Length: 276
Length: 276
Figure (cartoon, each protein chain N blue to C red):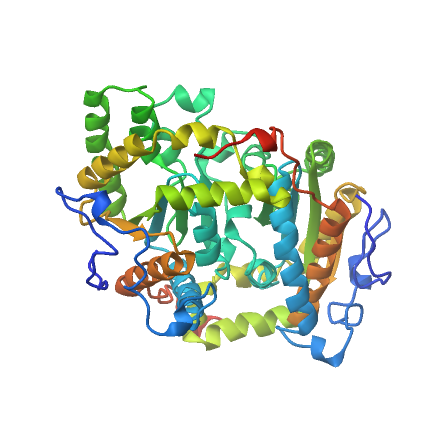
């Protein structure tokens, strides 16, 4: 998977020495083309969405390869909003969004990649994961449910699993929406202050927030160890929603342009077809 | 499920004496509010799509009920285009489109409703079926794969299955996109005439076309026998795409307005939450 990306630390494809605390969640410089870009419906974002819609149709017609977009973030990090802003306007017949919550009893009776594998995209489709198999090296680790040797072995499992997907025609792009702890406080408070948003607030979010440093460490380690060229992580500054959306749209469109999907040729004799 | 619909034969909720040949596939009168409506992006259609997007967000937030839209048609009848035109603009996180093709060996080793049930929408979601369990009283009957007593028993199975869905909070709306045989000829020819559409053409469509009267009869019977108030069929004139799209958008929005989904209230003590 080779495609051009803006060369800037604000969207990192991280290596083994990656440090999360060196990415500024407020950095909005890399994708600003004009002052108009600082809006949730900037001309550039609308242009990218329109192109994404066209590329999705071609991918669907080609029916050979697929795309998997993985979104992870701290609570309030903007996964729902990002998915909505990126994909509203794309034909839902070619997109499948999967949200992974706490596993069911049935899911727990299988290995942790079983439910994930079942939701990977078909040929021609864009699959979107709202949370993912990475929860199995994040929340489980932070809460002490697994030992160090387990999460380290899981990095290998995950790399092998994503390599399998990539070898079978799925382009895997992973996004960590990077917000600051102060930004999270503001967003949680905003949910409490607006009765129409109360349903989005969970008192448990306050307990999880106290584990912030442990989560940041778990993310940093997972990103360091699971970012091969065939399934890169992108660490996207996400305090500013317009910058986050623009960055992700640029990356997804660039990846699809590099795939260059083509509608298949006829596999029948066109001239011989007579419609009566 | 009670909601107001235009009182016109052009969108029928059929009874036991329904006759398909009494619906004119060219009828475009019922939903025309202004001359501007005769366009694939009429002001009314854009307004309906915008409202559908809002209602879907409320349905998702409420997380109690769901909607299932079933689309059936003769080849080239416009299922793909209808789904695209209705749902592009709705957040794909709340929509799941399922296309049912020829069943796999695994699917055939279960009853015919097994694969269908697995794809019914979750609470808060809009499920969309591109083809459906109705193929099991259509193509199988027309090709003589099942006996009359089997398809008649299947009408009962299907009514019971859809009643189960309805009783558990799923609003089921079924659409037959009604085109004429002459319109199908034009649309098949258009696919042959345009190299970028060749992949949409299947030489088998020509063979199926020869069975037109048998298919119309099978549709008429299925629509007569499987149109209870809790899961109505709508027979939508579909020769004119703009009229088809407008009719379906009006019906879906009217149904969601009647459901009147509401975001849930907080189930925790809002005042007691302190974010540090």
